[in-house]
Length: 389
Ligand SMILES: *Cc1c(COP(=O)(O)O)cnc(C)c1O
Image (cartoon, rainbow, N blue to C red; front, side):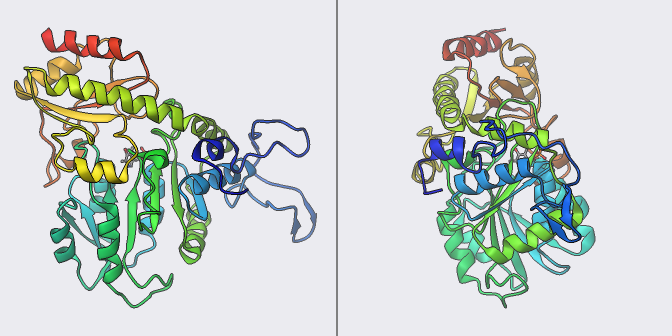
């Protein structure tokens, strides 16, 4: 397929009509195995851990949307993270942001440290700190931008430049510099294209905006490097954390409307951010495109819109935050994000509880919103009444 616009690729890349029936929607190939024409002569697929046509459609589409050559789908965002970390070997060092997703920190700290990897968690928005924290054994830089839940924004292309200057003996996948991995879950490829900005690997929790309807858990990885892809595809098959065909179908179907959804998520969230930042009971509201955001300039350079996520701190602290998250009527009190419906939560007690004993702990009074696609007047009215209660 020639390089079409994003909206067109979202609907068509990897999704040609079914050859046998003409079905316009990619069939859900609910099968574990495939008939072979002769011994060792499969028709393209052998076993569904290794490959499945519904998954291939999703992987092809993801690669096209991120501007990569190769896509891989996983059973969850954490499964994708696990596989990417297996590119490393004992003794390797990972430089990561100090406000990465709580589950990412838990996997690094509670699991991969046991296998001899070392981690530093730094403020990646401070480029001098990034430069100075690289060690001779640093083989991966792990960025999340914007971050969950603080919405901090890191300049991807500058960090990519710093990583590329840090030369390493090339190792078995031959990049010659630390892998720059960007968790693009919050922005999605519609708002931000990390590979274009110099990242080596893009990672997603497709559970969030790519799926978009709170009905599936999944993950994805995209890269332009053939050797990296070959190694990751080997690991995907060897370890086996693959999504089932129905889950692949659901993510693909969500992706078809990604562009229009992200535009409305962003305009709704921007309006909610404006409302909150001028509310007398709100101490501070963080949204990438707000003038008051410390990295709003970088955000406007590398993102098309500000996205659907924001967080805020109330003057009344944790006690008042608990009251507010329990008194909204449209914003549902729940973990996760990126669906059509608006959600509200308290990260310190919910999504980010695993960071409570660490340097990554978040303010117990921080409230996180995933702004959905309801009418903006209803969303603002809901927050207004919750803040007045
Ligand atoms: C949710 C999330 C993950 C983990 O993805 P799962 O699909 O829940 O395993 C990773 N990174 C970010 C930024 C997330 O929001």
